[in-house]
Amino acid sequence: TLDHDAPKAAGLARGGKDGVRLLGKGELTTKLSFTVAGASKGAIEAVEKAGGSVDVIHVVPAAEKAAAKKGVKYRERKAHKESFKA
Image 1 (cartoon, helix red, strand yellow):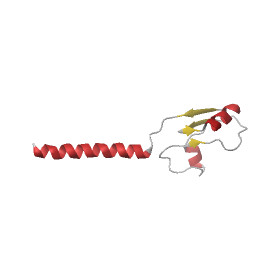
Image 2 (cartoon, helix red, strand yellow):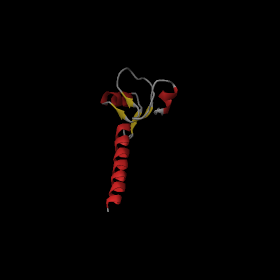
Image 3 (tube, one colour):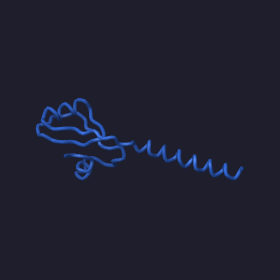
Image 4 (cartoon, helix red, strand yellow):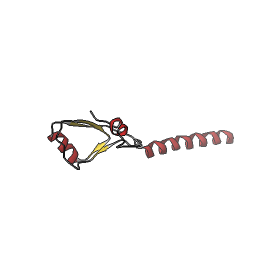
């Protein structure tokens, strides 16, 4: 099974905030299993044709996480300021 840790350890991927995406360029002749954040239709077809499998997991993008966190902090500050007005 190949997931984000394997290509990162080999120096083929970095970061990892938004997960690894599998793209369908090239040729696959070995049966492999992938766990990725996204995959193109061509990549999925190529992996399945070689007898492997692709498991697409849900990864929340880093930008979404930051926006959600910022929204919480904003609401907390606003509530704190409102408590002084009452």
